[in-house]
Length: 199
Image (cartoon, rainbow, N blue to C red):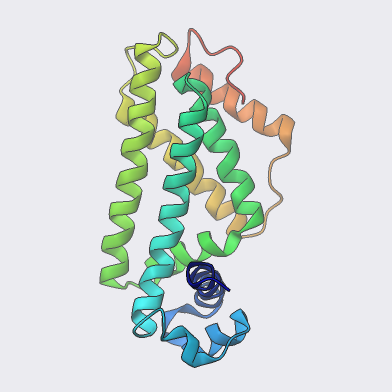
């Protein structure tokens, strides 16, 4: 396996293991077993368990950021991009809940470095959504009266609810329910030009 592919496979296994056991409860041997490799292989890519843990946390944020930027680049109308960010995130929660569990577990464990990293990741995503909303205002698709930062906060708050919803294993919203949710958000934030923003 190419080195980068092997590294990504180790990170994916680390996310699952740290999400299930936490930092203190997991060992590199657990990660190696989950990845189907010998434990010494991990140390070719990561100096120790701490470095592996921090890399796994960073990967969860980087994946969201990179995916959202790709989606925004694919949708010139910022208001459409925002709706697609939400749809992507909900699908990602269903496909890979371990990344969300790892993020929340790292916060619950009170690790100072993990908390600092989480603050930076959340701030980056909030800024990105705010910039998209500001662009939607410039494009005439969102009212000037709404603060882009407030719109970003609301968007992120709804995302956090979906995190909790997935964590307690409540059924996710189906497509008609998601469309209704986006419609409510549109009326709250995107009037008077919210038609067709359900993504």
